[in-house]
Image (cartoon, rainbow, N blue to C red):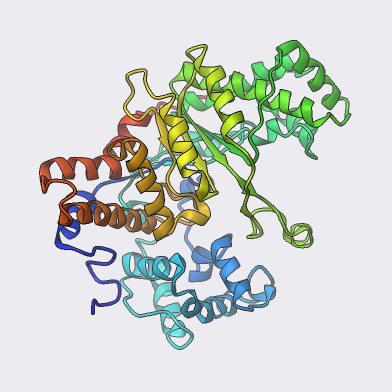
Length: 474
C-alpha cells in the first residue's frame, strides 16, 4: 500500500517517477489563462488568514460545502472566517474522490509544509499554523507566485479595463514573473444582455472614441487590442456558451447595432449575425497581431435564478451545456481561414463529449508552419480532475499530436492553485510512463523527456512568444 500523497503520488511505475522528477517537476509555469487580480499582485497583498486565501471566491469549494449540507451563512454569508474554515474542514473528508481532496492537501504540503490530513479535529491547529505563516515574511502574494516558479501570468481583462496595474507591475524590480493582460470582450458580444449600452459607453470613455455607429465600435475594439498588445498581451479569450454562425455583411450588422444602441431588442437571428461578424473582425485582428485566440465553449451559467439574484454570477451555480457546436464552429473557423486570417486557436469545451469533435475539427485547420497552431485546450473547469485530464490527453494523442500540447493552466482566482500544474504534470508523466511499461512506446528517455518538458513548459513558451514589454500609456 502506498503512503497517502507521497513523492510518487499519481505515479504508478518507475518510468513515470523518472519522467516526473527529471523532466517535469522543476519546469517553470506559464499560466496563460487565469482570473487572478492584478491589483493584488501589484500591491503584494498579505492574507490575514487561511479562509481569505483559500475560500474567498472559490466556487469549487462552495459547491462541495453546499452538497455537504453546510448552511450558506458559512459559505458566502456573514459567519466569521474561522467558522467558515471549520465548515470547510468538516467538508474535506467528504470530498474523497473529488480533486478538491487532493488539491487541498497538495496546497497544505507545498505552501505551508503541512502533511497532516485536514478534518474537523485537526482544523484548529492547521488554522493557527497557517495563519502564523501568512502573517510572517515570505507569504505575500508575490512570494506565493515565486514559490510556485511562475514565469508568466495572463489575467482576464475586459476591453474597458484601464490595465493600470499591469502597467505598474512592469516597473516592479524585485519580481521576476511577467503579468500580461488577456483580452476578454464577452460583454461587447452580448448585444441583448442588460448593461450592453452601458458597456459601450465605457468603451467610448476608455478608447476616447465616440461610438455612434458599428464602424466606430470596431475601431474602438481595435484600439483596445493595440493597447493590450503594447503591454505584452498576446492572448484573447471568449466565453462562447453557445456557438452561432450566420452569414452577414457589415452593412447589415450596422443596422442591428443601431437598433441595440437605441434600446431596441434585436432578434435571435440578428444577434447571431452581430456576433458572427464581430468575432470574424476580432479573429482577423488577433491574426494580424500574432495573438492566440481562446474559445471557452459549452458552459450553462447561472442556473439558479434565486441564488443569482442573491449572490450574483460566478458563485457556483453553473453546469455543462450540451448544445450543437461542430457545424457553426467549423463555419466560423473556416470563414477566417478562407481569408488566411485564422489565428492560433485554443478550443475548450466544458462538455467532455466534445473532445473528439474538437480534436478532429482542429485537425482540419492545422498548418501555416506553426507547431500545434490549433490546440485542444486542457481539461477545463468541471473536467480538471484526473479522469477529465486523462480523457482530454488521450483524445489529443489519438487524433493529433500530444507532443505539441501547450499543457495546463489554472483558470483560477486563487494564488494557491498552482499545485494544479503539479497534479497535471504527474498525470501526463504517468500516462506516458504506462505506455513505456506496456511496450507501446520505446524507453527513450531523451525523446520522452523532451516531450514532457514541452508539454510542461516549452511548448507554451514557444506558442505564445511572451516578451517582457516596456510601459505604455493608453
